[in-house]
Length: 201
Image (cartoon, rainbow, N blue to C red; front, side, top):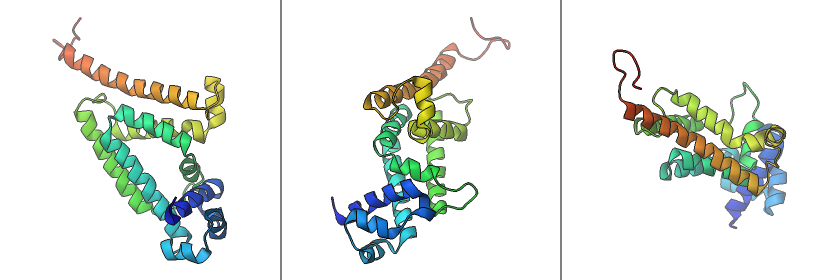
């Protein structure tokens, strides 16, 4: 692992454990096996580290989204969250009402994601009567739920939410839900428009 990647990995764990305000660059440096000065050289400090991590997570999210169907992308987000939970913990530790670092950049990328979902909706990947922003929020929440609220996941499913078996099963189920929305769209198209205000038999 290169020096920069080692620093980012250590930073992800530190932010995940302590949040932005509680994170300490000296602990990140110790975990990465580098000097505090080297982190300053690469990133400029704690805020620069957080922004670099946010950019890394967004780039990975966009890459997955652009190369897979919505159902498969969400399956991969579920597994990603389970295998690399630090970014989920970092997000859930952000203080409500507090402007997080790199918020403008994150907002711009999330807006692009919503616009991409509109295009998917137009192609029939899910029903046209669903609000795209709500869809994005629902399935983002679904993808991080086993990590963000593990005790609820455990009680509802009676399985260990951190186990590979659970993650595979849960990811598949979430993907099936999205596929069912697409099938409902296709069924509606096959039925055609209602006749005299009444649905076809």
